[in-house]
Image 1 (cartoon, one colour):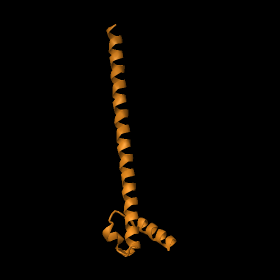
Image 2 (image 1 turned 90 degrees about the vertical axis):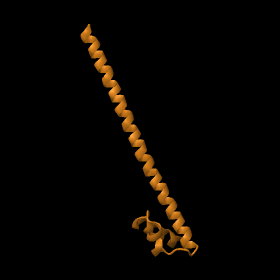
Image 3 (image 1 turned 60 degrees about the vertical axis):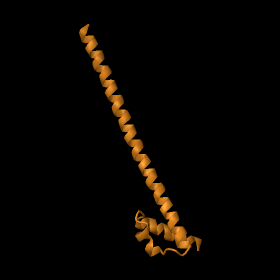
Image 4 (image 1 turned 180 degrees about the vertical axis):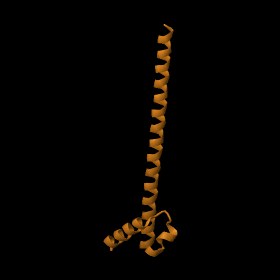
Length: 87
């Protein structure tokens, strides 16, 4: 009888261990996804601001890397492409 109790306790502890690690993994994944979304949003806002400033004559395309350091060369090319379409 004592052996059965031990097996049940071991199984119960194992299940708790698995639940804990599954919840921890899900939380880490959610945090990672939230960070990626925040980065996307910030990049989008930086692009929009750069475009507004260029259209207002306050900034040139060449100055974008200096004032919008979070934007990559690829982002800047997208801005150029968008500005060419609106002209």
